[in-house]
Length: 390
Image 1 (cartoon, rainbow, N blue to C red):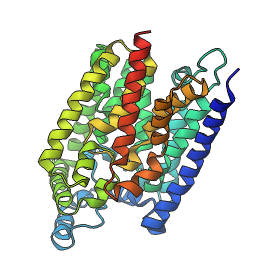
Image 2 (image 1 turned 120 degrees about the vertical axis):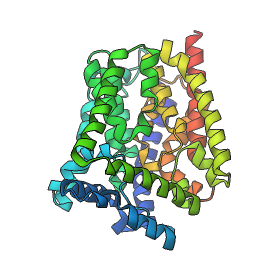
Image 3 (image 1 turned 90 degrees about the horizontal axis):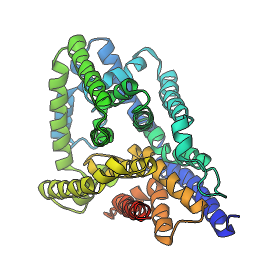
């Protein structure tokens, strides 16, 4: 039988997830107010409507952004910042009213994620561990619900990206063409899918890579064919404006970021130093990750991929974190099976608190998200090494 402390610990963590969810909603209500909730949805819908009406200069609105930067520093930088391929993702919003569009935007992402979580691939990953193990698949669903909340409050796209990420993993062997298409769609928000091509290279899965490249190329060519090359020029200009904005007043954005680069900038480091350190961290992560991707078990691969995804990119914000539900659930399963040492339990606790604690501490220049994700990564690497060595 399972020991009581393990069951009590798991129930306490689930309770903490519920409290974290409620507290996160309260914090965002307090900091941003009701009018700021779902604010990014309006930028997506506006971009879609401009594209549908062929009002191309208004999609990125470079002129207005430049004037605001010169006069106010753009305290509220609410502009469409995805590549033009992202217009294919938001385009249906052009034909829906504000409220129906918001409901569709949130519900469609959640429905796709729930479909993915019910796939045999995900159920196999979270099957009972040990003879008396508890089926921890419900833990994955609960954890995803908690970690998706910030994404839903911003009406952002990380819930969709999480579903795409998991679909690439689930279909990469059985349906390589579909997996490649899912990976190619990541061109609209590439930073969250950076490590998936590395996995495919390690496994020599050329079919998925070819389909991914073809899909991304087709999306780019379609944007040029439908709207011309001007959108890509405007997008490049908007990235430059974004860089100026970060140099002018980066505090708020860096305080809600999960990357090491942002943490260093938030601590006062220059952009050059932070980028150099980020490069060193990426090199170290690749050294740790490559052997796991080549020879590791499937659970080891997904554990490392989902943790490293938020450290290899210099740009990931707090609403991009839904994929962290996967390592949380994997570590929770070990806690349920009563095989997790204290270091794993501590790392799990830090990881679970990321949604609610990050903003509170990082606004005081304490790089909590990097500490939490880094601790979980160290623990995960030690776990993998122990299992590999028997």
